[in-house]
Image (cartoon, rainbow, N blue to C red):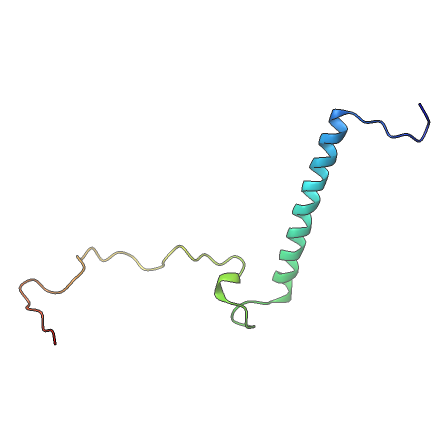
Amino acid sequence: MKENEPVSCPECEQMKQQIASLSAVVKRQEEELSLLKSGRSSQTSSTPLSHDIGRSNGNSLRSKSGKKPGGQCGHRNHTL
């Protein structure tokens, strides 16, 4: 075996894969951080609301009223 020849072992291969995946995560987080620091949002640029980072689209701030949907009971419809 030569001195400069890399040693290949299963643990080394697993570590290389883990390093590659973690590097991708770091790169993605750096891009997200740069967007947050630049102040770009739908309010200050032409980016759509769906691209705002940290914005929750699913939760409404309104509370349920408890009333049934629709018109008043006994009221006749007026159609054209």
